[in-house]
Length: 324
Image 1 (cartoon, rainbow, N blue to C red):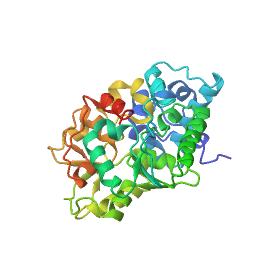
Image 2: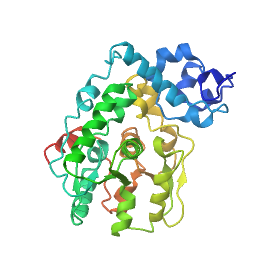
Image 3: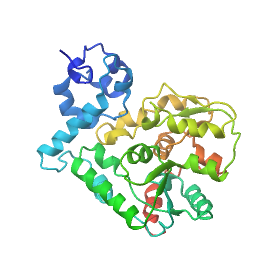
Image 4: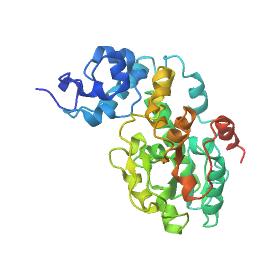
């Protein structure tokens, strides 16, 4: 008897293939296990296949497990080519900075928000500082986890928890939806909250923003938890964009599928210049880099910095966080 949570339940109805650019390119379904073993690092891990599967197969988790199996078979090392720079930076995050992680509550901007929005990051840090809130610059470890490096996942989580514990930090405020979704269930004895919840608590930021379309980041597409918190700043409702699968950065797949990654947001270029909100710096930055200049991170509107994604100096901006 088939278990409808495993790939054996796949009926090859092609629903996932029709909805996923990666599966469509290779003409395969989530049940084509032998082909997917060879192509596991080509997947964007966006969860679209899981969302549309009539048999309730968790395709994202299946692909992630294929990656974990490869790493485990190679003794815990990643043999796939093309990830050297990512590993060098994020396996033991080289721009880590807990120098200003003071107080019971701290801001955790993640990797990419300070990269693309340094001005807004600085504004936010200064605003929260008035309430005794510090800041820590670190990577949550999700990119390493998505490469299938399970042992490194445990080490990174332990390291973050150790940093928080020795500073007696009780609350961590997340800007990044990936950091929020990934760290919230993994942090022991530390409360994880979103920046939008905290801004509301302190009465910081502009409200009554005009309604617009919103590009949902992958980790918030199912529950829309952060979207609900953001809508308190909107005079009306935000309309989620359904026709774009992923921003193009998901699952570290651009290394293997650069053309697919570049063209993921193509539909947004033809939206007539209409403003589109994002609440993920990775999404906003990458979509801007690939020509979708009308995508705006909503925090730049709430904090009235009007900052555009700095796609040219993003790496330099990230490096600077180590020395702030």
